[in-house]
Image (cartoon, rainbow, N blue to C red; front, side, top):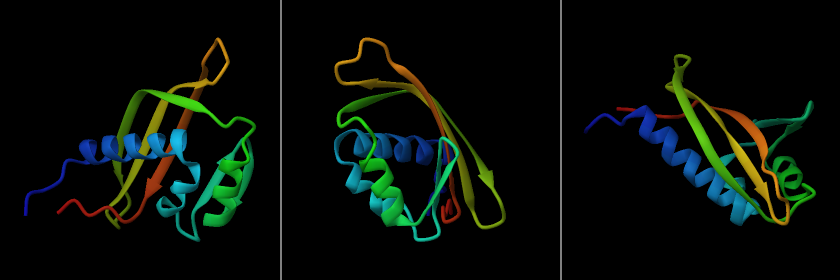
Length: 112
């Protein structure tokens, strides 16, 4: 079996995540586990249902993420991957975009 390119995996994940966020935030549930934690502006949110509830309760319904950077690196002995994303978030009806950054850690990526 050919070895997967970590950068290609990270890019595909980021495209899927932000497309889903922009169009169907409830659909993000499948990307989290019960042990997953989202830290949002200092608030720690644990578990799939709580994370999805937070993301769907944000004070805007329509948005578009424009990704500027996707950086990834292996993390830990369990074939994990750390992904750092930055870019702009354009809210519907707003003239100026907001800057954003996000770090994601996956401990179940198999590159073999």
